[in-house]
Length: 510
Image (cartoon, rainbow, N blue to C red; front, side, top):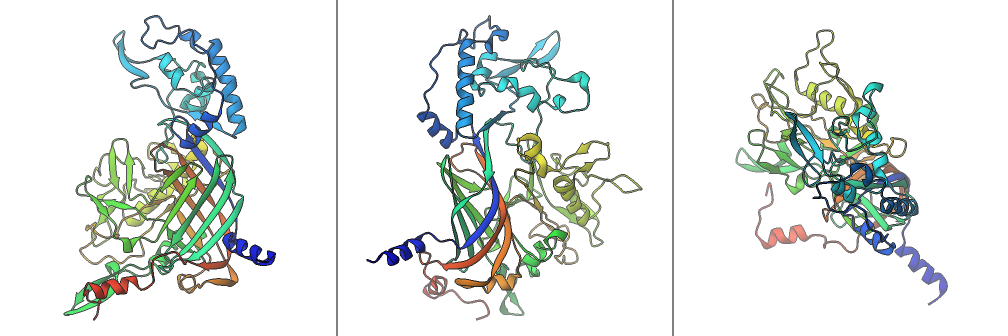
């Protein structure tokens, strides 16, 4: 075999179909991440004994716990480990519940008593010096008189910061690794199902990382209904163009087609929040996928409910024929667990009650994109800034952007405004999305080969570990697809038609 032919074959196995410029952030769960555990096995562990090891001892000397010579040795080794792998630790657990602490009566008052040894054994060495400055609300407010005292065991001088949306950061300790995405492989495909897929690969100190997305270009769910005795295929819920509807939610999306990565999404029955409504597969516009070193991922999908520590509130409002809200999120008592208040209201006669569906969507946009002040003058920063506020990742490092689904474009039939089945008057929170600078029809017309002009766009994807380690990671950035390959490994084309004939399934309208 000649050398040019070998190189040509190798080139075919290492496609460069696109350019990409973006950033990533990996939040490794410090105690359970497969990547961290593998790296730990390669490290020489510190072999030393603490002077105090018994968490059940009656005479624990709290002042000595972090002045122990063994702790200093472990802290020095931990600093080397973090430096070697570009890791930044943080741990904002409250340590107020078992096995780290418990509420006890002291002088007639409920006081959280923490077990110093159990906390030390769970903490990243060295973090005790940063805990209060990073985690306590009092360390970040404008009142110098309530600053924490530097002793993380003092029970009454630290209110642990908590995010409303990205609220997994107070569950465990994390290591953050982030940086620019430098790809070595970029593969764009039209799959055997006719979907558009982009897969990117990069090398890291933790091994190979791959991530990407797949979308249905002509996404438009349909249903087969009986109209005057004739089976007729029509748009699902008798709605118009979904992609055009999604693309009209934000002014900055003008000229783009927006696809929500909603695979795996569910709605919650507003009349019974223990009842989940699962999407039909034809309702799914796109999905994302990733593997980061040793850890595989689940996509973090669209949220159609406000999940809080006290329950869940469907992101839906019912309206009367005049458009006024009559039930749902934050209306007439709502569900009792809503965590997103109406902001920037109560001024100039503006009511702080959800008046109609557009007002409900604005409530979510204010909470996630804009921030603002509620009716009690409590200031809220945008939920999309929670990475910067609680997780050590500035918007300059990774500009995390959440898209709120606005279904105002849907036509609600008279009398159906309080019917939650479907998508009328629903909204969703979307950390995963793809924007393409082309129309839906232009995207659907793409074929394998070199493109006459690059397909330009950007995307954001968010994942969590599918082995339940608790790790979370994100990627976003912009791309230009110059060439599209053809999927030769997917399902055989025409399989749906073959199965329809095999099972004698009548074709809609036939």
